[in-house]
Image (cartoon, rainbow, N blue to C red; front, side, top):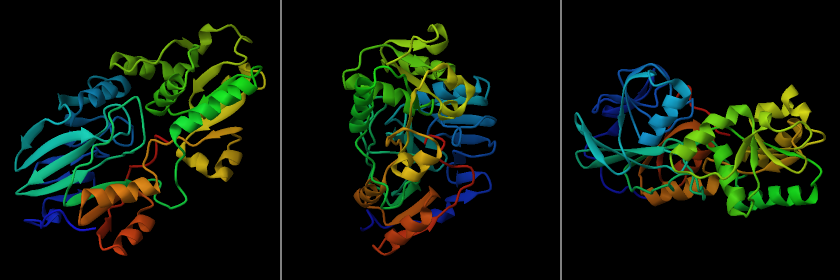
Length: 342
């Protein structure tokens, strides 16, 4: 692993973490700050990255739509949409957003100053996801990465395989409803599209908490097929049907309306069998919206970055690996960024 180019000036003089998040002093903005700031660039709409109270927000149009839906249209003083690939000058730097492949509208922030390029990737994955634009590799001098699944044990199954596993269980147990726990922003819609691609055409039933974001995805051009609100279905009529719900609903009174359901959970953490048993999950589905270990390592290598900053997750393991392979690595330990999407 070698650097793309020699940096004209140390990054740490104009890009560094402070008490509110990652700050670009040369551009006068924070990236995904966890406290209100004057100017924020938001990588995607998950609540550990997109918060209310900022003076001005710059993000992709889709991320702004998500923030409006989750936080309200008055959740920031102003919103400025920046479509993928367009460049804007902010003080001393040029900024553009490129796809991160995480969820709808998710973006990497590409920052250039005096011939140096930093890429703040946000949360990302390289695997197939029919609900969002695929990850775009950008060569850079500095790559800022997550490390949610930064251990060699985490090698995710192809999501298409897990979708087929779910449909096979439906075929084998037609007398049982299948409740799929999946986070409402990103994972739910991805699972729906994956089973549609695998040939499932029947209506899919939604817990009430999933309805509005599925409607948002469809408004943004992501067709999800026939969907039905569970409350509109007659009690006792959902044997053999597929139901999407928040993971917490699998353990709540809501789930008791289903007689002997199959409980499934779509998450990268389902790679750890002990987690599945602990949560009482009968059908674990290893489907993640974060990069696994091989994807993290390959992505860092392909960027050509000579310096890598790690925002959150298993920064110890990834940092050690990079340092032993000739890459300068630094753990930022940014407060407030976690794994809401898993």
